[in-house]
Image (cartoon, rainbow, N blue to C red; front, side, top):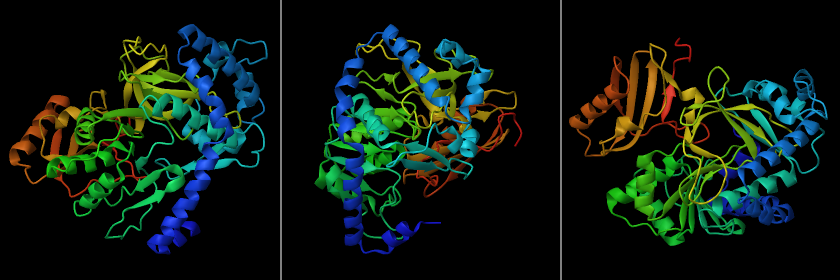
Length: 463
């Protein structure tokens, strides 16, 4: 159910909505980009040239500080005691003995994870996830600014832009009434130099208005969900409309497939810089100008684990487990964030930074598909290889032996394309029934995200 503030907003005329967005944007800008934000910028820039040994020592010290804070949290203290924590203990040895923290733990014991009463100015961010039961993440005012300093130095500046660059944003916020049928499908926040475009109105009849608005705005950076941005990009490519070139595109929250990157860069004429973060504020990985996904070791400790809990070697996909080193109010230690990824086999980058490199984020743990013989499958982008007449595609595993290929076709889609999809799927997984389903649009999640893979089969192989 919508909150009272949302009901008032959507009941208001568009000029009033615009005024409310501008006012909120002014407050939001001041909260994130204050004194602490600017104080951290030079230090974070200097750290980028640290050696691997310096990063390891920094993490050891930060982990010790984190344990001292976590000792005051009712949830963490018994875990630390069982792991043999003392002031003299080696933090890495204690760390290795600690159990994993699940999303269910966070949902059920969110306040017991707090090390003290939240001070004035603390914000609580809620994320419902897949169960509908919200997790609550506590952001002290200073912590919020520190997190933004990391994004500034390790994401925006790597892409050649700053927090003051003129931005077009395609994200989760619902800035237009669901039933709005004429432009503007965007609202402006002057304090942030931000135009927030609705991702819930990206239909063919509305997309020409989006292209016109983007070309009038001429953003210096385009930011948002890749599967929303590519809807705009592909419409521009199909209709031959040339988009004003920004300095960069920054993508987040969804896996950037090769075809999506190609079309985004082709339509906007600039590079895509993907970044991987989370509302929990305990992990950040961003692409440098060489294209490597560098993990920021001072944001958090990242583990990639096999199902048996042992570390996955470089190149092998495993579950991402993170330990945030910045949030001392609500420490998240060995937290199962729900993603799967792999370390890059080559850990040296031409950019010169000795920060760990991910091969990339492969997807969500909940979207792993399983075969009857127990194999796990995740990346299905090759299924769409060679099929150009589609706007979007999604794989759904209905059972161990049945898959759906959902596609939003263009007018050029043919029976030959349908057969090519089936052929590609047979190369990816054998002996299953495959149905190609044509749709006008593929539904998003409640938060507006696109799931490229959906599995209705439990990991143990039972539907």
